[in-house]
Structures are given as structure tokens and as C-alpha cells.
Image (tube, rainbow over all chains, first blue to last red; front, side, top):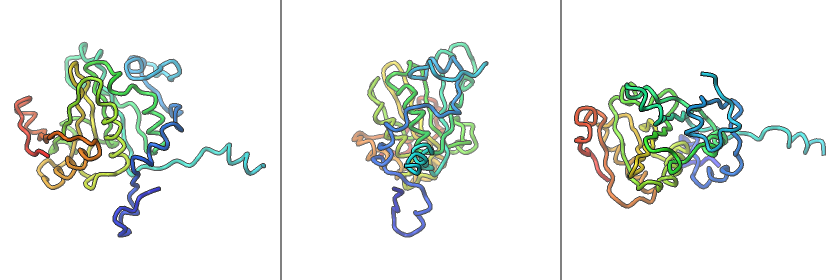
Length: 58
Length: 190
């Protein structure tokens, strides 16, 4: 999964992921992280659906 | 059967990223009310796994759906997307232009290349921003040491490959942009 780009061992310590590998997770992670919070003024402008977004009081 | 049930209940292991990254958003409706530039920019969420990246990305508008005036950033954690940030202060940026509504794929590919550490000089990268404007959408990659030509040229060339972008792109020093605003000229082109 993690590419060993140069095969020299050093790169093993860097977490590299190809685009194709990352795209495999696109449809698996659809729910917001539990700890996600956002102010309501930003939520309306940024979120696809702000209905279920926990709101910070501000 | 018990083991299978336990496996199903346990959260799947996450894929850690090399760096933590923070999404920042500058809200156009707030911009009009606030005089000082940068005062409306706010951090949205910091993620450090492949899964958390998608969980947020899938729930926020992509550039084509953001309002005109919006700026959406993804920067390494602890680096603020501002010229004044000590890590960015001596840096600069590569910029790619798209017509309005046409940058969604390039924005995603830029993010995936950054968080997946696909750049040979990834340490030089501060983050990326998409600026949504009436006639165009601009994506920029901010870097740390503008004077390091080898690193900047490498990043610019690789970025164009990742985006399959064939036109020439330019690199502007933040220092020049501060002094000359729109008069700043490209120091490097690829």
C-alpha cells in the first residue's frame, strides 16, 4: 500500500500513497468525523448539507 | 462467527498520513463586513488519516459549488495560509488557472498528491489553496523557500504532470506579491 519509491529503505519511513490507492477510499468515508464541529455561518457556505452538522455556539 | 462479529464491530484501521493537514475556509459573506484582510479566514478541521480526509472532503462543497469570493485552503498543520506565517514568509506559489466551475478535478488531484506525498520536494510544500472568483478558479501551491529554484521547478513540473496540465505556469515570490501586488512577475516558469 505504501510505496517504497526508491527502494533504498529510507523511503519506507515516508507514508506515500498513490492517487489510485487514495481514491479507493472515496466511497467508504461518507460520514463526517465525529469530532467535526463548525460555526453555522461557515456551515451554510461550505457544507454540502448542513442539516446534520454539529454547530458550535458562537 | 463470534470472531467475525467482533471484526465487523471494530472500527477499520486507519491509514496514517505523513503529515497532519488543516482545511481553512475564508467565507465571502464575512469578507464584506470585516475590514482587515485575513480576519475572516478560519481553520475548519485537521486530519491525519486517509479516511478522515475523505470524510471531510465528501461533505464540503467542491470549488465549482463554492460562492464567488471563497478561498478554501489545505495546509500542513501549524502553518497558517498567510504571508506572515514564519514558514511561508520566504516562500512563493505556483498557480494554475481554470475557468469558473472547471477546477474540481484539479483541486482533488492536488490534494491527493500533497497528502499522499507524491512530490519529490514535498518538504518544501506549505499547502494549497483554491480561490473562487467570478470568471475563474485559481489553484496555488505554496512553498517555503522561494529562492530554492531546483525545488520549486521540480514541484511545478510534477504538479503539471499530476494534473495533466499542458500550459505554462508561473511561480511568484510572496515578497514580490507584497510589494508589487498584481505587478509581480513570474520568477520561474515551467
